[in-house]
Length: 314
Image 1: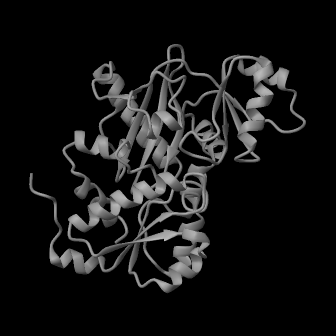
Image 2: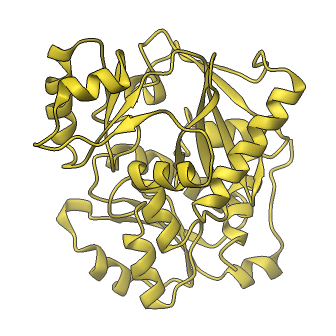
Image 3: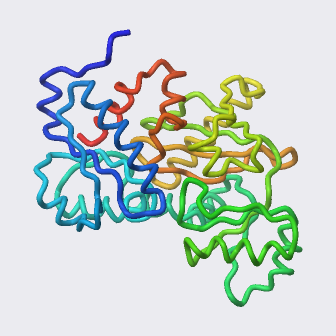
């Protein structure tokens, strides 16, 4: 297969491209892998690209950016400080174009609670939830949501700090574990049906992937380390269901104000139908990642994918 390559004219149009990865969030290790893959893909496609490992060895990321000579940035930072609008704001101030969603959509996408509030206000389906604090009556919350529940930090990705709880005794412990990563904690009703993920590229949904894992849920290990996670494009949905699911993902993406590319995670509840979980504005691009997988199914090579994303910065 011939590797996808851009013309010298487009290479000049892009100029010098900095791939920003690493960072200091809990997802640094994944960002390093994603960044390495993106950098290789861009270089294979004839893009003049180089990498900047932000915060490497305690470096000042602002100084790193000021010292680097680049025309635009390919953002592949995961988690807080990179995916939450912070780095997008820095690049806006510097006058440097960048890939993906802007400041507001990045911040909203990173905040699972605000994202759900927007979807709920727009009439889009999402599981029942609560945001506990020190005054919350946990028993009352449990009566409202029912067991089991899923407890997660409100501003982390990659399933970091998440746990399933089946009893009142485990609930307080799970909230405490999530608070190790984030003061704000989201507690959701458990959805027992199949989980789907839909990559969105330039506003259009790519082929739907159904996730299957022997773990209790699609956790960090299932996402990045396990070899027993299965990804199905033959996803047991009718044609009408798949069309509706793609449309829901596109709506959810647009409602938060996202642009360029991203991924929407959805579960199917037997009674309530499709339920939106979250939107990822800078999803993984590792060898286990879902966006490249969906792109391949659509006939888009990794090189073409990263160049298409980069074109969004023009």
